[in-house]
Length: 333
Ligand code: SAM
Ligand code: SF4
Image 1 (cartoon, rainbow, N blue to C red):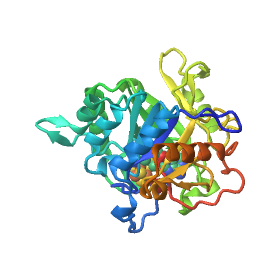
Image 2: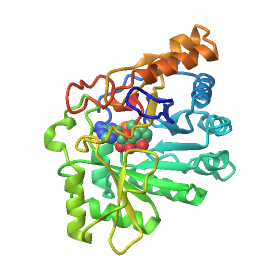
Image 3: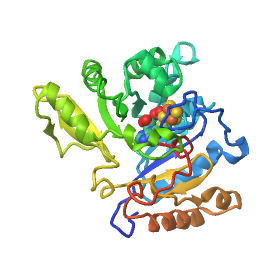
């Protein structure tokens, strides 16, 4: 699938829930959440059907996300079925890692079960290694659970365990080096992400913004000039640099300051309530659930998906006209 601007679509982010056991300041408001009613959420069967059709059109990678995907019952059999789809060769999970150690059966952790089912990678959100700060950012005192969750993912033998750190002014400065050292010690691929205006809370103020350029400069003060590795990509928008004298690479996701950010975009997003979104940073979304529930054939669903691809914008609106409508937690990061 290719859009009007030459973006080749091969990657589908699939959100399976808007619920979460954490309350990250930049992702959802702190006050009591109104979750979507169950009937609004695509059933696993419905999600699998949409993925199958998308795979038939050229999608080869799916990342399961949310909300917190591990809070939804039945995720293990769902991921197993996803991994069994012919032509889908890469399935990953995005998680806050708090539940990865949970037992699904006799001594088998959810991490192990997902890996055995065929998931290849796990992306874990972790912005700080300081317990108080972790609680301030996420609203929950769960850093220890996250660290154990990362160990469970490593023990389960995923091909890659990546750490995503959202950069925030006044917080990230002290955390950059400890996170790099933690990633080095554990063999994790660390990526720094610029804060995007995808929720309605006041954290998205400019005073909280921390650019990847600043992060790089601070890391260079500690480690010396970082070495760009343009040939290393991970199927997403991160650009990677190597720490001098080490084999360790660190990724930078500069959604706000990298003006070429959207050029290599290969993604569509499916929200848990059945909206196809051609771009994270655009208000555009198209209701595939209604069409599906009205009895659409696979050919009709194909037509729907191709139409959404046709409407994919050249780049996101974050720097211009974007008005946060949905919270990140309800889109699927
Ligand atoms: N709960 C899972 C997790 O935390 O990884 C999956 C969903 S979460 C919405 C996916 C990713 O989006 C996380 O890495 C999170 O840090 C990122 N994210 C959420 N809000 C963001 C924002 N305003 N700007 C940049 N990244 C954000
Ligand atoms: Fe939950 Fe992930 Fe959003 Fe944090 S970033 S509130 S863990 S969905």
